[in-house]
Length: 515
Image (cartoon, rainbow, N blue to C red; front, side, top):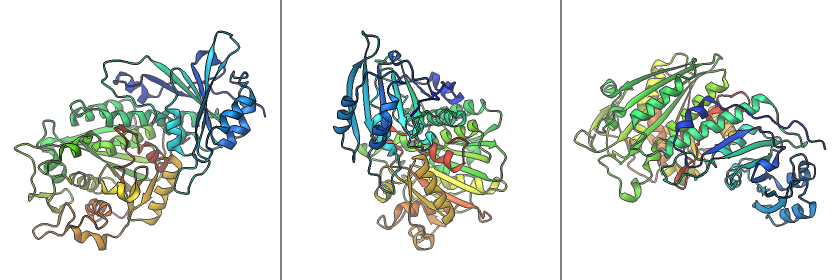
């Protein structure tokens, strides 16, 4: 087996340069395709792959990357010490050719057993393993010939950016290369660009979600999006702010009590092609529950309630940077669900942009209100629209339905549902279908004085599907295209950190080149 094609480093993407001024928890320079010949420039090398791939490729891989002193009895023992079914890691120290230099080598084994509803490369395990790289590190991923973009997305999730800790860690670099099953390194420039771009998009989305609400107001969110839009001449930026949104009763009602006004941000990218897609994101920068006030335990972490909008922002700008051949609109429904003298109330009746009226029976079911206006705007104003995708941290019930790693998806079209499932499996942003039955479930919102209420009467009756159907009911009656709802309340975070979920899913749905 001949090792060849060691990759050259790629220049930083516009998104990663825009993030350069961001507060950093781990000031990590993350690059894909770096030359891996000089081991002495790094503190450690991590090699990650399936157990069988590690056994097959390691003998011919080590010398070309400067680790010829790692003898076969040592790495055989390291691999034997890892449970191949569950995966894990093993570490040793070796001397490089330079006698004084001691180098850490970590072998990371991905689980060999993977169920049909998990990603073939166990991307969540890959994220965990990549995150154990310390100092200046090289990471070699044995791809089993799987696309490298989704693997890069998984690596990026291990390196969040945002922090306000007073002790700043030292700057470091993590250089990643991808090794194919024949032992050669991926050197395709389109694929490497996609890897770098999706990683920047994931880190951007995660940073936005992790930012605290005093910093990331609706105003700041819109300003950051506008600054990104200015970097690409193919992207246009518009917004409706405050009282301009009075006809958008859901978005205006939810956000009018906050210091910073609600905003409807309208982005447009024209890449040509024969499909027009609208991405509609829930951007509740903080959710107190409104006058249906959350308790202390339930309110902490509600800065994450704009995770849908953040994932779509990362996906939209990544797609534009990669030059997708589609017309893509991104609509961000930005608001803070605050309390105050002008807060909307239970028993209020809101007039939505769809023309329908909603009796409020839960001020803490606000996400569906802003998204109802968002999808109504998309289906009324975007010409020749083929697909609407809304994304949101919408319901806690999603975690009960599909868990913490799979988003719940709902669609009016079986082909769209299958497309989303396939794209989720490819991208590593996993998703799984929810019950689709509006004729059975919409009665949950029955109101005596308005077209509907905003919260179900029976929380045990498929409530996460009900929430999606509420949004669907505000699609314009003239719209005949597909609709996909993505509830990513579970996979949007891991512990107290954002994951950047949604960026990869969007790129896969849009057939991004190289991804």
